[in-house]
Length: 259
Length: 247
Image (cartoon, rainbow over all chains, first blue to last red; front, side, top):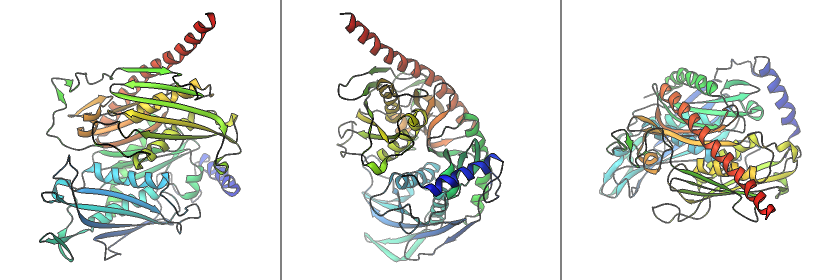
């Protein structure tokens, strides 16, 4: 369906970018204001809420005991899901997860998993028993770039995550045996290509107007996950320029995360 | 997905486990127009991968609320047969991975199909992975691209796709399953042939900027070869038809 208001806004956003500006007057490589709050759901082993401009994402982490995969008997389980809650946007509807929701969860998952931030072997308990980490992304308010907000909240939630005590084959949730070991802080930067220009951290209106987007997850030295979305094309040079920016902005994002 | 099991050697004396050099692709054969009912189709064998793609459309868009008054909508369903892998029986129908891949493949084709010519219609791409051995999304893209052309759908370009990555510290072209599972990185890329525009780009694993550059370069070289095979497959259809007309 065509949303007339979006069509008009789309032309406006593209026109502004063409003139070298953004509708909220940010620089092309500037994030909106970011705040990170951790430990806001004490019942969850780890939790964090990220505000990225007017976007808000909550991530909760639960630890359970799981059965390891047959081909990886000593490795823990890491699983990420996402809910684009109907309260977050008029465009989100109740029902089975959309492709957008699945993509969001899988992009966040790949960044954390590939970076090696969590040593899967450290989650081994005993034969046929490993820790299973369930990371749930809850989109609360959608004003664009849910990917970066979710990735940052996910990282913050994992860094704040406690290990429940394990005794005689049971989990004692009220007692903790220390923190979940996390060895790397992965930073995820999403760019939008709008009318031939690349902007960092697209707002909702910019996402409506974009031709495509590119997400790059980095550690200080390596690219560790990426996803292009949307039907527009990017050039090799644009990709490598974005990678430079992602490395540079990565340290800003990491500075927002506590150990 | 990368497994990070580094105890397994993937390159011995400069050769990969299946005997290939670092830049060698697995044998790739493409046959266009293999199905009768579909408007366009193609069958691809790429190493041990066996992939069938079919295209229907432009046709009426059902459900109608999916349609666009200005252009055709391009839809894609990538799905793996429950018997396609050497491992246990899979579940029928698209899983979360398949839904994500369907989305990024569809987006790559939205770029090249001239959708403005067919407002209010749908162009459906179906990709069935019959046997999988790593790199199935690229094989699916290569097949679907030929199927779209076979259906006579106007396109700006053919799409060629290749997976590059890192195994045992080396950048390798066209990862097969073990390299995908136990290697250090996997980067599937799709290019538009005429200008090397990147239409699909995904990545996991760990790569430095220089390694990303090398991977892109190797992918571009491989894509040229794949494109030539796609064109060849399409030409053969017309040769076959011309011969039938003579008889």
